[in-house]
Image (cartoon, rainbow, N blue to C red):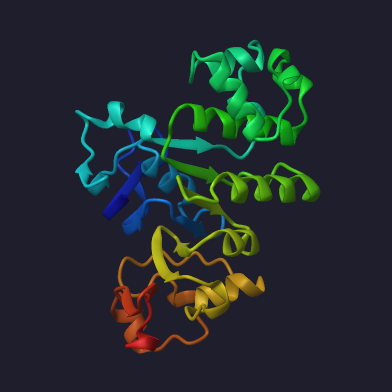
Length: 284
């Protein structure tokens, strides 16, 4: 299991000497069980990429705790634990060294040629491509190589960060079907991070909705979403605001159902079912 408990992350704003910070993640708590497919959705600027880096142990939070299989991640053990969580990036071409053949790239994860060929076949690629360079492969083939690499690295949890956005529709469908086939026995925990709500809903057992650094809803089906932000996100009607108040509900300025309490108080996540939670006073 991967578990985040009230994780905070902020970055310095402006110049190196600036004393201003922007809070990117605000007390984010979530978990991914062994073999589970979990989705994380939200608009650009919601904090999805920062959350991905923390889940993959590329960064540690400023506050809060991260656990991997019930072991707390610290500065002392983070490097040894990184291999447990792999990542497939938005643009596969940027994650593959253009000067290395595909075989050389995969050998960084495994020295066993037979194992490499077996995994290569598992992701639907022909062995002849092993001697090719990244630029000689299509976008879909490059993404399959990226998936093969995390499998060879023995990553038990894999984060897919906007992994289909650089691909055409037909290639997206093939990659999605491939992932479903690879994990049909649920050997891996998959985390899908995207703004593509339909794709995430199709692939995920549970979904977290992120808005301006906060989890506002957890659900096992977006069709049953109840938070005003999630509903607006699904309909494409979300209005960006410049509301920078530190108190009250973070969605107050854009919410069509706001009332006085929302302006004064910040709601907590309220669980209203096994896999159903919402940060909204409408459901108190």
